[in-house]
Amino acid sequence: MPILVRPADMERITTTALAQKYIEEQISDLRAQIGDKKVLLALSGGVDSSVTAAMLIRAVGQQLVCVHVNHGLLRKNEPEQVIEVFRKQMKANLIYVDATDRFLDKLAGVTDPETKRKIIGGEFIEVFAEEARKLNDITFLAQGTIWPDILESEAGIKAHHNAGGLPEDLKFELVEPVRILFKDEVRVVGRALGLPASMVDRQPFPGPGLGVRCPGAITRDRLHALREADAIVREEIGRLPETPWQYFCVVPDMKSTGIKDGKRYMGWAVIIRAVNTVDAVTATVPELPFSLLCTIRDRIVASVPGVNRVLWDLSEKPVATIEYE
Ligand code: XMP
Image (cartoon, rainbow, N blue to C red; front, side, top):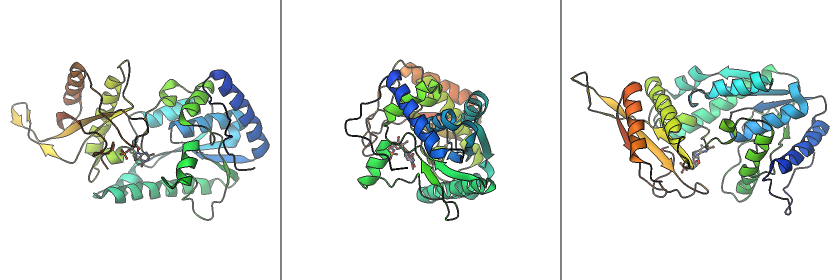
C-alpha cells in the first residue's frame, strides 16, 4: 500500500456526513489491504489509538487484536473504561495486560525525570513485544499516527516514535487509518464511529502518564493520592461551561506540617494545574472561580489520604512547562 499523503485540497472534516464518507473510504481500503490477515494495535485509550481501533473493528472485526497495557500510571478508571467500551460495547478482541507491578518496581527509587521516562517507554515496548510474540499469526501493526505527527517529524521538531522501538524479530506492515487527519478531524470521525464523548474529547495525556505528575521517586502511596486527587480536579473543573485546554494536578515529593485530630500531621500538597493554549508551545493560566477552587480543596483534604494542603499553580509557559517533568 502506498504511503498516504494528505492531498493539499482535502476538505477539512468538520461534519458527520464528511466523517461518514471518510470512514467508508477507509473501510474499503483497509479491507483491501488486510484481506483475511490479522492486525495488532497498542490501544492506550487515547483519542488517536481509540479512533484507529474503532475504524479497524468496523473494517475487519475480530481480525484486529488490541493490546491495552496498564503501566500503573493511568488515570482513575481509565483501564476499566477501555475494557468497557472496546471489549463489552464494541466486542473487540482485546488483551488487557496489568503490568503495574513491573513498571512500579523498575521505577522504585528513580528520581531523574529523563531516566523515569526512558524506563516507562522501554518497559512499554517490552511488555507489548512479549504479547506480540505470543500471537504468531500477526501480519500488520496498526498505529494512531496523525498528520501533525508526520509534519512534526518531517520538520525535525519531534521524533515520531509510533513506528519505532519494536525489536527486530517483530517486523509488521503498517496500517494507519487516521494518518492524514488533523486532531479535530480525528475527533469528528471518532464520534461518527460511535465512540463516547468521554473518550473522543479527552485532554492530552502524556505517554508516561501520572509518572510525570508524581515528581521525584514514585511511591505507590503518593501515586494513589495523585490519582484520587486528579479524579476530583477533573470532575470539578470539568463542570465549568467552558473548560480549560488541559487541567490536572501534581503531587510533588514534599511534605509540610499540618494538623489532624489535634496532632501534628505531615502531609503532601496537591497542586492544581490548568492551562489554555493553542499548540502547547506557550500556555496561559485561566481564571478559575474561587468557589470552585474551595470545593476542590475541601473534597481533596476530606478524602485523599496523605494530603494536608492544596495549592494553585499560576505559572505560565514559558518559563514553566505544562507538565512538571
Ligand atoms: P510541556 O510539559 O512540554 O507539555 O509544556 C506540552 C504538552 O505535551 C504533553 N506532553 C506529552 N505528551 N508524551 C506525550 O504524548 C509525553 O511524553 C509528553 N510530555 C508532555 C503535555 O501534557 C502538554 O499537553
